[in-house]
Length: 253
Image 1 (tube, one colour):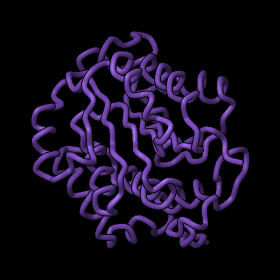
Image 2 (cartoon, rainbow, N blue to C red; image 1 turned 90 degrees about the vertical axis):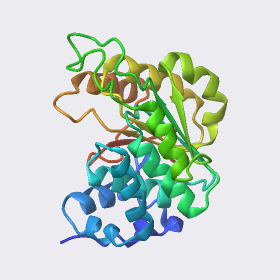
Image 3 (cartoon, rainbow, N blue to C red; image 1 turned 120 degrees about the vertical axis):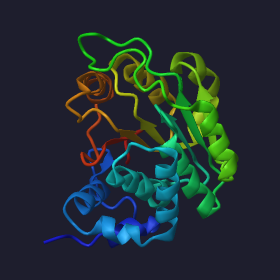
């Protein structure tokens, strides 16, 4: 029997059920609602979600609709600070950044999506841990992304940050205390480990940390980084395991 997912749509209901520093109640409702229950068909009738979804796929998002739906639920209903921004690491063609920016625009929020990527393909990878190789996803179309953002009126809400993370992130860290969600979708070990170790100590609001890749069979390096730094290093337990691996940091009280 499916549980009611109504608490998901009521920000005042959060946290829905705390356990081990995460909102396990919300994680169950989002995950089971999307995988087993009727949550996604309900979201398809939501005009804000539908418009953002169309913008994401028009730009070329590779994310499964359930993943975009999960991001939508966290951004719209779960983020504690309606003015909080979003950091995305690994944007490729920018579809998911556009998606989240369109949500912020439709809701009249003041936050921004900072979309970090080389936009020129993957950097060096670990030949043993990582299946991906340098240069994968080189067809990002950076200039086309900038044009698309302007055409959609999203320039106040989406800011691409071009370059290697260890070169671009340090200058942006002063902004991260106000971040409500971090979306990490960069597939390979070293960048993910760097991002966890660099960003977590700067967070202050029970931030959603959303990993796209670790549960894919092609991304064991990403899973290694999560095991080493998130689970062993920061001693966190997951809030959600489908369609993303989601943690909260600092731990909720």
